[in-house]
Amino acid sequence: MDVGRRMLHVGGLVALALVLAACAAPAAPGPDGQEGAKGPKRGGTVTRHVPSSFAGADPAMGQNAYQLWHTVGTFMLRREPDTWKLVGDAIERWEFSPDGMELALHVRKGVKWQDKPPVNGRDVEAKDIVYTLRSITGLQYPELPPLRFPRKSNLEDMEDATVVDKYTVKVRMKHPSSTFLDSLAEYRSPITPDQVREHFGGRDSLSNPTPERYLSAGPFILTSFQDTIEAVYSRYPDYWEKAEDGQSKPYLDAVREIWIADQGTANAAFMAGQLDYIDASNAQDRDLLVGTRKDAKVITYEPNSCWYRMAFNMTRKPFDDVRVRRALSLVLDSAETGKTLYGEWEGKPLWRYAGPLAFSFPEALTQEELAKLPFYESPKSQKTLDEAKRLLAEAGLAGLEFEMMSSATTATRDGAQMAINQITRALPNVKIKAVPLDNALQLERAAKGDFDVQYYCYIHEPTAVGMLKTAYHSKGGRNTPRLNDAKMDDLLDRAAKELDPEKRKSLLREAQLRVFDLASMVPTMHRASQLALQPYVRGMRLGGGTFGQGMFAKEIWLDR
Image (cartoon, rainbow, N blue to C red; front, side, top):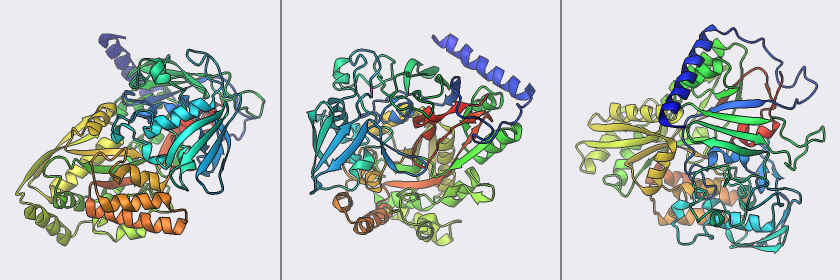
């Protein structure tokens, strides 16, 4: 589709959405949950929207891998979204050796790749698991730097992985690990066929999605794809998991994604019935959606998979000076941001203090502990404001100008603007230019170090150790500030090896407090998530830290 046709496509969608939203009468309310229905119905297409490009979606080396693999992919293990229980997916069972130094992974027989070259409908095999593990950890591509592998910290307790037989993998560990299994359930790390990149031309051949190269053994296959226009995922009839009726899941015939960059246009499309569900990204949008479409259902779940933070590029002056980073961090007001952007729902606040770990992790500093730290003071006292000014003056700065890069998605862009407002209100001699970019572009720039300050939603890792190592370890795959702190590395390396939960929690607590001393990547806000659903949408499974509406799209059905 050329540029002219693309503009006509988007423009027509916008106009139609606005007209229908104004004129259409709401549909009659449907039953809540599965009440009133005999059971899941088969057929139909769910339509949802996405706001930004899918470029850079390689499942091992892509910062953007979360965008579609949760719909297409099949995984080693998976975490039930409501209970966080680990269950088998392509790996049906596993066992550690008595000393914890070896892990056997047993591949489920009959999990079949789609019938396309080079896999041609064969089973998922041990060699695919080995290739996937070695790709995620960077062992497959040792010439590349750590920042090319954003999820390597989750699995770096692994020494190597080898094929035992067609359906068995042996993983050798560097040391016993209490987190490795959880990390096999990372929903941005699907199984990829053995040597798939090499088959299609080399290590960068999966950088951008194509139906020919993004091969699936999951519930849906990528049927058609035009980045920033439309993607269609069709039901995979040979998916291994069966429903209660004895047929293969999923229930839907297809999932369709359409690109709508503007949230207001997406809201209008939902209200017109053109989208089946939508993220109620802030209080204003939610109130508009449910006020106009009174039959819509709102689902609340927490925490949101996004952990919002502000990262300083420590390779650029003056952000190599901790006094500057601390000064700018001290005047951020997390409570003000949460109350302004998210507010309350049914009498309960939707926002939380954002610590170095998501509040859902048992190892996280508690909300009460965070509230006592000067970083979370709200409103800011004169003492705190004076301290921030003193730090800048001590660093020799009478004024400061820089750019704050963010993605252009509504929640991230709005959070970045709140941060800019708070900093410039408290420190009038600081000037900040907002630079909202397509998500794929700003991720690419962050990985290259081409930014001053980045405001971004960083999706949770499966474990507290993985979360902190990825962000704050010198070799972390999302350490975009380029922090290199020996004490932090030591704390996190020791935590990765510590099997005693309380001792590990103590190490991680010290690491979290050190985050505020170093101020390289500062948490800014966290919230519960809300989806608005059309009244006929059933089977939606959601839970903290996952894109449940994608990963569990196989459970969705339409009662109409």
